[in-house]
Length: 208
Image (cartoon, rainbow, N blue to C red):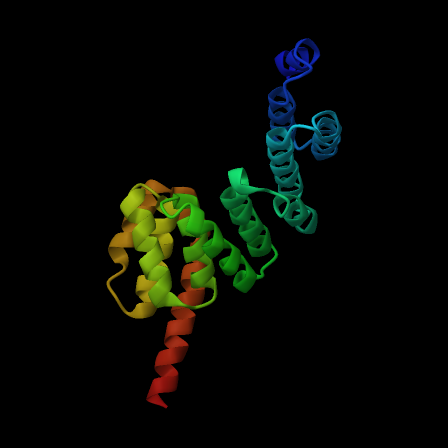
């Protein structure tokens, strides 16, 4: 932090130290200070379009981290071509955090048009399809994620959930996920229980 503050003093024409210092402040949960710093920088660098875009993106991240999703969306919505894909992805994640999976999916798919091989974007698409119960499409996107990032424990676990609902072999996904990401695997046990109940209820309905 001290180095970045010095940089801001010594290089007043460079917006990057402002952006980096705001990122550090977000990591320290100092959201109000990060917001104030970026708002000040937006005033200072108003004549530099590239700086303005990056600072709006930074400000969106501040609001996202603070869970103020409407404000985050408003910032990401102002981005131009340079950061448009990244902005759409963050808008998708903001809607997702608010539980609006349909809207989140729409923005994630839009982000995907400009970054079709981006693992994070593919994963957000897959997660929203899973949340909406569209298992066949979710499986396709999870398979794309795992083709690009085979060590992704979260995607591996979720792919197992999809396989389970579809009636496909799933144990190997959970075994692998437990090794790759034990924390997410442990958190996913509730999801697993919910899906097992859902499958049992479906079987019961079929028998009746």
